[in-house]
Each structure stands twice: as C-alpha cells, then as structure tokens.
Length: 245
Image (cartoon, helix red, strand yellow):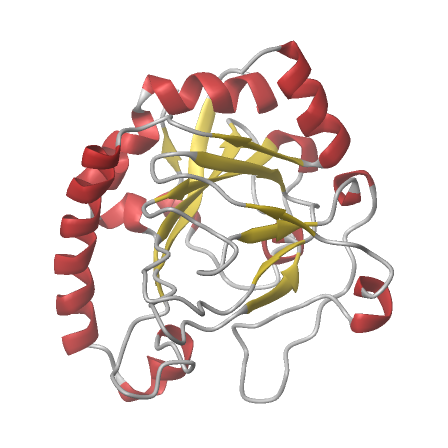
C-alpha cells in the first residue's frame, strides 16, 4: 500500500489489497473455523437459528456466520496481530489499534444468501467514525459469481442513514431503497488471502452465491485505541475489545 492507495481509500471509502496472506494460510484458518462451526451448530439453541443459519440453502443446514472469532479462536487472533495486516490497517486509521468485533461469513455454494446494502457504522455507532476500518479477509476467491462485496463509491464521505430490518430478518438491517436507488454499487472481487478494506460509512452488500464454490471470509473490525462503539444499533460485548498494537 502506498500514498496513492491511501488516497483512493479516502476518496472511494474502500480498497482491495491482494496477496496479503497465502492460500495455504487461508486453508489452515478454514479448517479451524470448520471445526468451530460444527461444534457451534450442534449446540445452537432453536431461538437463535434464524440469526445464524443461512436461509438461502434449503437442502442442508449451513451456518450463515459466526460472531467474534477473535475472542474464541487463537488462529484468528494470530491473523489480527499479523504485521502484514496491521501495517495496512495503521496506514488507514493510524497507529495503535484494537479489534472491537469480528465475524466469519460462510456464503455456502448454490444458495448462500445475499446481504443487503448497509453501513457498518450504523451497527457500531463509533465515537470517531474515521478511527474505524473493516478488514474483510477472503478465505476463498470472492468473485462476481459466488458473492463478492459491492461498494458505493464515495459514500464514506456522507452520513450514516437510518436502517430497517424486514419482518422476520432482524439480522438484515439495511439502507432504505429510496436512498440506495440513487447510488451505483461497484463490485470488488478479491483473491483468496487478499483483504478488502472499507470505511464504516461506506455502503456495501453482496449477492447470493450462484456458484458451486464457497465464499468464506473473516471480517475484523478495527478501531483506533480509545475509540469505542458509543451508539450501537445492536448490543456488543465491550469486554471483547482486543488490543493488537
């Protein structure tokens, strides 16, 4: 990443950097996540299934996501601390950072559901919007066919809008169509081991997985030390904030 890349991030609100990690490192992380996912699914209470199960896949029960892997898996903590990633994060939000929240997204083949357009900063409500960046690590190649991210260029420079959740989908908080219809969305494919960075105000979404390949990812939400989620739309466990530099 150079000064031009940082300027692009400031202007567009997102930046893709390929080859941060090796495919072999991603394979190792996937094996660990699959073990965790199996045990998580076996003990998942019925009342939480709508939140974690992918409704787009009807032939089998598949997880949609897992929350806070940085707090549960040493393998994810190791990537969060890795200087190959931290050097990039600190160029975007400055030195001294923590992971405040994290997720694993599975997006299984042949039906992994779409994610409507939203802004992370609506979910998180950080005290300093500029002191937060999401690092979306591609555990598989993310393509147009299997559900790569799409971004609204320049929306990082605008406000955080109110979101709504469709009935029965409390996890799908999204930007109203009256606002979204005015904003073109740019695809951002990324190779396995690459990282797609985005500002918390940036509109982003993903389509359904129409391919026969997985589109797994690990999202680490970094904040500058001293920053906090002051006005979140959902409850977060502040004790899980994990300082990495």
